[in-house]
Length: 358
Image (cartoon, rainbow, N blue to C red; front, side, top):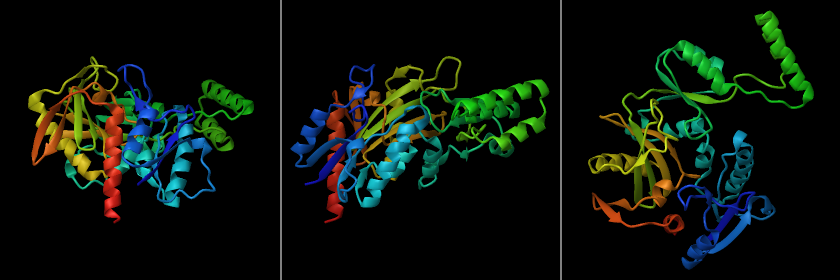
């Protein structure tokens, strides 16, 4: 019997569902509880803020969530607690690495470096903490710039030349933090000085005297631009089941995320896509993975991946899925339920871990 602890956020919600295919909501906790108990597990559901830190959580399986709140302030809070539980010997599902990679494309790209398959590394990324370093070290164009946080392609930009790159790098990395009224007044005075005098010495004298805020220090990454992508494929993996759809690019744009143009994957494209997606599932030891995959007409490219806080639309809207059985892809038809698939995948994974420890 496994001891499972499910951690809720400040809204008493747990992970993502989109049952009406329009509005995000919490997964059904009553159903999840019943499904885990049905498998013989012990279940405790509690808000993350109500954890008892005098208790030892070693050996407990921790199911948790993250946050995409602006600024990642609440996610930062979650990371502290989840990492502490891991140091105690709690078994995080997923592991802390994948929490850190969520809404943090810089760390996601660092994880990509650990993959054995070179097919998953056709996207080459340089990660930066300042626009100045990126401008100095980038000299081949076109390139893609991505803010470390954000979804829906809002902070995914294309730079065709050095001038575009400099402007867009500063846009992505610019940050102004107001601690109090004096710091806001100092910032206004600084801007006025620049407009009136436009002297470099004014800029640098002000910067080194006043560190209440900082310019161009928000982390981001730079990637090679893959030509010929008409969109991307969304693939969700739940414990051996692969769900997929095609997402067409926005009109007159290189970006697919946020386009809303979703279509079933054409039959002639499925096998190559699924074979590529399976390579990622062999690299990551976790039964729930979301991946964005591009195809340029010759090669597949892993654009992004996540193991937590994944958008479930591809599963919940799907009328079929595929499984890899005896070296072949087998199609199954039917409507699946997110809670059923989540609990089945986690249960099977826990059993596998416990069998390893026997």
